[in-house]
Amino acid sequence: MDRRSLLLWLAASSALANAQARSGLTFPTDFGAHPQTRTEWWYVTGSLQSNARLWGFQVTFFRSSTGIEAAAGSRFGPTQLLFAHAALTDLEAKRLRHDQRIARSGFGIAQARSDDTGVVLRDWQMSRTPLPTDTRLSRYRAQVASDSAGFALELQFDATQPVLLQGDAGLSKKGPGAAETSRYYSEPQLAVSGSLTLDGKPISVTGRAWLDHEWSDAFIPPQAVGWDWIGMNLEDGSALTAFRLRRADGSAVYAGGSLRRAGEAARSFGPDEVRFTPGRVWESAASRARYPVQWTIETPAGRFHVNALLDNQELDSRGSSGAIYWEGISDLLDEAGRKVGRGYLEMTGYAAALRL
Image (tube, rainbow, N blue to C red; front, side, top):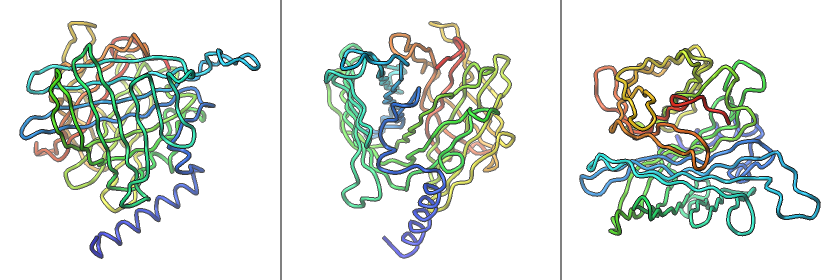
């Protein structure tokens, strides 16, 4: 590491330490599950590449508290449910493959550690350890396999930057109400390596990914039907987040986001500083939902265009979390139309109002 890189790293690490002190987040404990909260997820999205071939992928684990108290001394009370989604966007074949899992916690079938990231749902799993070369950073591993969808992922994600605390030191506002908040941090610019198995054929891949870990009792204000969100890894090492909670008429209930340039502290966006303007719309033949697959997004960091790399990246998760939503690999363009980043666009509440 050269002197300039070391100074940038020390500055970013100092900013993170100060933010952690303000927010009360403590790592590695807060990498783990928070079963006292209603809803939680660990969300990894990104791109995979082998030679000139490109795929997008999603691996997500959800934890949900049922509100049902276990009877004294009984292991059978369904106090926690775990869900998982895995998806692969095959751009060459113009096809989205996806699968899902659900189980109640316990009995060696499903569990989420509370001291660090460690989520297991049958044969799917994701875990975290310190990066061997720098214990201040994280290494994540994920394994998922789907016989029905014909793909499997065995991937490693190495952090290249400190944890990004979203909002105010990890406390992210999700609405105008005092209680409409989440705890939220990201791990952008993850370096990916591993294997993609496609229809029985293993392929060595590399790539770039983004992890979100978020937990809350109140993700969505009552007047919102869903959200639009982007997490973009920029080519210069920056990380851009933007989101809005959306009413049924398309207007924003609340908005936010952040930009963190490599080696610098994050700059959070206020609710009046982010604007999503929809562009071209694609209609799903399966759900009849209409999704904007091109967006213009205005932020204090600039005005950007988001273009989906495949229109049909709709996932039907009614067999697990209960929602139909759109989640897909997309490019980020500047005002001149030049590609400046790549990441994921997520849109919920278009097929039906989302309720968590």
